[in-house]
Length: 175
Image 1 (cartoon, rainbow, N blue to C red):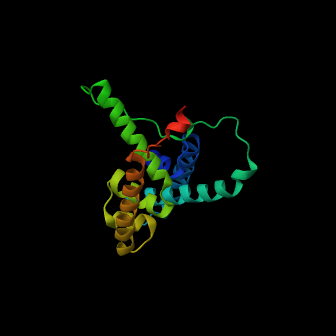
Image 2: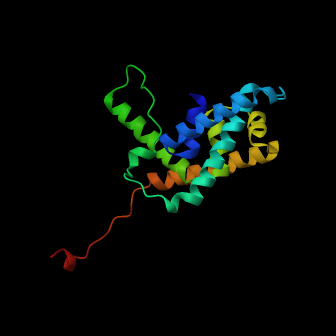
Image 3: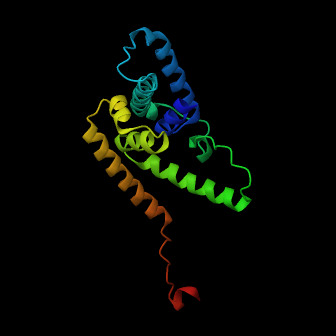
């Protein structure tokens, strides 16, 4: 499930995420003998997952114009909702779901470099060192991207939450 959640947030399509996760575990199964133990098994699997998601997005981006979908609705791009905790009111559940949807939309708009570090740190709760190992980046770069990614995410959320400017109609237009 953690690998699926990570891939789902990087790929943004449930069906595609399932395919990518399947590829991840096929690679893990085939390459487990090559695992040297330099990092934790989780870090190694996450690195494979991030790389597979990137490869998939790259391939899909190149070939997307050649495909014609039968359906294209907003629901097909959302990761599945998690189960709500007992005791929350319907209003609280709706508010939480709306907030989660806004954050997921904003994450989808982030550049892939920022999205992967923010998801690994703030959603998957990995350490900076684990993220650096997964992405093959220097620790300073990871910290910088997390900071810049969070700032970009904050700006996107702020834009989504600001009320739209009101149009002032002149009396001549109303009549």
